[in-house]
Amino acid sequence: MALPDSVTTCLSQPVHYVICKLGFEKKDTYDIDNILSGNGEVCWPAVTEHVCYLESDQSVDYINSIRSLGPVCESVNSYFKSLTKEQFVIQYASWFHWTNCTEVFLEVFDVLQSTQATGVALGLMKLTSCLERALGDVYLLKGNDCPFLLRDLLASEQLADVFGQAVMNVLRVFIGSPHGLNLRNVLWHGFASPQEIPAKYCAMLLFLTAGLGQLLQTYLLQTKSVLVHRPYVIFISLEELDAFPDLNSEILSIAEELVKLSSFVLKIMLPFWIAALTAFKQSRYADSVILLLPQLEAGLRLLFTTTNKCPNRLLTAESSALYTTFDEMLAKHLDNEEVNQLPVVLKEPAMDFLWDFLNHQEGPRIRDRLSHGEINLETFPREIANQIVGFAITILCRFSDEAMFSLKVLECMKSIHLWPELATVPEEKEQKIKGLEGNAEANALILMISEIISQLQHYMPQNCCSSDDPINSVLTERLLVELCDTHICTLYCPRPVLEVVVVLRKISAQCHQVSRQVIAGAGLRHTQWLNKTLRSRQRHNYRRMLNSIKFLSPVLRLILLLITVELVSVHSVCKKNPFDYQQYLKFLKSVLQYTENLVTYTSPDKNKWDETMELTKKTLIKIKKISDRKLMLMHLAT
Image 1: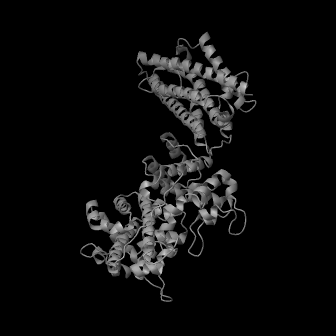
Image 2: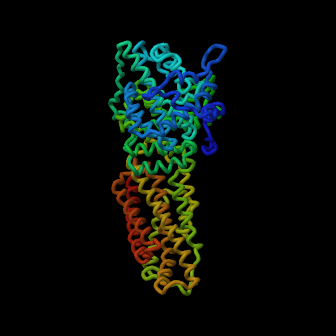
Image 3: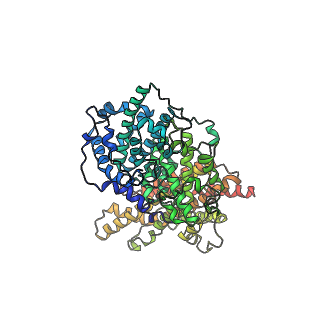
């Protein structure tokens, strides 16, 4: 799979030029009063005069039209920024009623007041969706069977009869035509990154929608017609769509880290992913799915073009060719009749999910219905959003270059392996710690660590343990790397697995924090020792620290090995072993509590090394007991 960091845009060079540069070539300052009447209505003739036509056949000249409309869009954007929300509502809110989505358009105004690029992109996707639905309702005033595609709807005689052909041509410059800006398609199909969509085009579409409302009101009065809004799609039997467990804050936190590491995520699209997860946490379920679906398409397109060896299809197609979209990516064969390799990589369960949610005629067809405005955004069901986000997290895990969790464990192990290199005071000045060094209890604890390692042998590669030095031969980074290379199936993980992984991840993070504090603290204390700036009590505490970390190091390495083994085995053990995972989860949480206490005890302002050792002994005994019980149950199961 191509490295996502190497992709700087998904817009082909001509499309990038049209969207990002063409409308900025004319530097004229356009007076907003030219297109606004005294009462705030849109002067349509002053807008339509900027649409240019080809001499050959009088069809729209999209290139020159975009260039000519650029300064107009800039003026509209500046005008909206000059208004307060109250002024905008008073002057324009009533002109959005025809869309049946007034609140969405008022939200778009709010977005334009900020500088957040993801907000502008989201606003445009929602605006185009609601506008398309409303235009379809208008179409049904004069015709039957509303066209499914926006480009066909905008080119229809029915809408030209209501609004005028010149007005429809203005709209087609911005949306619906592959020859124009085509803002709706490049966003909904995941081609445009947040920074590639100029805010002024969003402002202009908001302005034009209000102007359409003014024209429609006149038409309805003249014809004595009534605009009827089609009912929204209502999802039923949502429980039948339940493939993933309910997502909690811990899982979403993991996802926020995964998006930064997964090769499935294009770096230029990262803000969309973060915004989607944030929206879900804020219970803005429609926003979350609207943001996420184009990114799933973009990531799958990257995978599709890699596996089918057609990297040129990653970029937006020109107006003369087709986009690579979900429809083609989920098909059995490519357009050249060769077998599509994406299903081979994704595997059947993932393909089934995508088909069921996106394409199947009896399924929810989420992307189609959202993008064409068929769903009430305010009441979008959490259940569906949960499934889409859950699937996205699974895909992130599936296409992480290295499992994120494994990376964290390995980083922590590397950090702890630096401890022996820490500068120390001369040995003759070291002070033995009561109850640990050089007595039977210390030897018993070391023996306990060796026994636990021996019990973990069942989960480890063969011949990885030396009988002469089981601790230092096993508790190594090399072993963890080998364990972390084990393939783990993450698709449709049961809830117990997810709960265990969350706790294991937290334990690893706390261990890493302890190691960072030990390295920083030891370095500081050694410098102070050499400079003779330590008080008597601080010197004694420093000696206790040096002796404590000798024992603490193998214990923390053992915990890292334990959680790595659990990560590798939790899926199969959960199915085959009668071991009670709720009880084991309780044990893991007690280990987490231990590591959290270690973070406190080893912090620079605490330095409680005697307490650290006492707590470590108790935790080691707990680990030995649970390890004994797991070993016994494993033997019983076999």
